[in-house]
Image 1 (cartoon, rainbow, N blue to C red):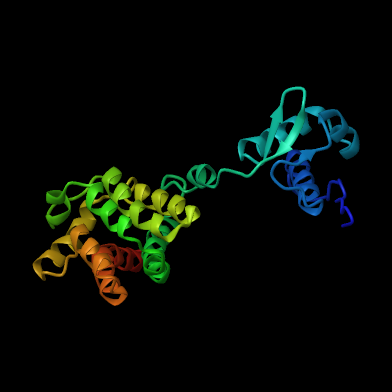
Image 2: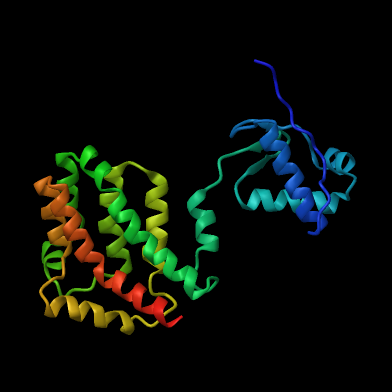
Length: 244
């Protein structure tokens, strides 16, 4: 197969020289079809000469790419491509303190959308060991009690077992971030109202209900349970969007 090599050049724009240098390096990597493990054949000096920028500019651009896990410098060996750590990079930008309320609510809503969307894969991949894992992940008295509010850590622990059944690491990474950020910024007491409504109408679905629905291997039953489990979030999101 013919080796296709990209063109290393800065495309003029309105951003900083470091931004343009970073973009030029990324474009070269993409156009050259470099993949994790491949060596990046230019060092700082060569990049500086090729792009006609100072070594300080090149160094900062490379530092950015390194911070995102795109490249890795090996002492006396050179620069190599690597697969970025998606969860680490997501965590850096998906933080309620850095997001508008609209984006924060979008992410909370994304969890609801994904929880429903994974149902077919969940039941296609389900094994008996997965059900045993769900029973073992948290004490039974905790998941049966509809009045118990799990800590963020326990919530993540429980639902991660479900996401692992789907066998999609990116899903796990995104969901763990969304669950962990759910009320780090906004007043959680606002959300309690919706939980109370669910309890008073006997609609709340516990984590134990989720396990029993999965154990039944009835995807329609599970969809009903997971929707009721997440309905307080859904109502919270809908109300908050109306007042924005």
